Image (cartoon, rainbow, N blue to C red; front, side):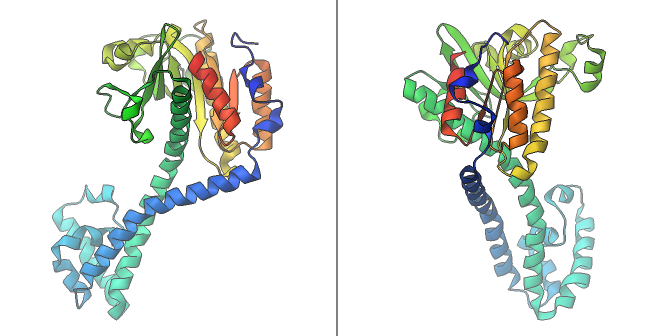
Length: 343
């Protein structure tokens, strides 16, 4: 058993407690649908604007002369925003001429409807990408809210660092949890920083792991594997100063806990996400062991199926994980966050 004891026993009795309940799955799917609907709103507004302006044209070729819908025409033609940046004026014109001739003209007097349908089809790919990113954002937001509540209820001071990393702010100044990139607090007299998505040079690649030896050469040249949650023993000033932060993430003694956070609620992808998380946690454990270090490792996620619950429980009992929780269960999430904030 590792040096952190068995904190998971405060909220777990067996692997069965980790499994996401049907009610939690339903609630998660409802929340996901509402979030996706919000993301889709902007594309619907754009489509309505395009339809209104395009309706002024009496024939498809006239669309080419309406200056303020050219970007919308390119989107309808299947050109992504990224691809459009690589096209010159003549390239764009050639694409649109062909698009009008082969797609819009055959649609007859329904060319505006055809234009809007195809615009939304292309925008659907963009929406899909945003939805995939939403899973990670959503999970981080949930975790941040648990952190914030922990400190507010306890009356402890908590500060946060935003996306621009320009300075630490009081928690009362936070209006959007999605902007948080790190939290800072004190445990007794010790300074703590909990950071999201940190690239850790100490974590070796699979090829390096095969050699089963510490990384040779200049470790500063390695970007390292990203870790979802990193609890560090460091001050606010040291973390925000680039040179000191660079030193912090390269020395094992600064790491207190490292965790994987999985926000997806769909059971179909749960096992695959766990395999990725489990492999990463194993890589972290082995990498730090080569330096004689053993930070506490933990896992928290929304979709936990029976098979992965058994694996997680086994890792907890063997001491390979210090803690784990199902984030759809308030008791479990609050217990894990409370443990983390007191380390």
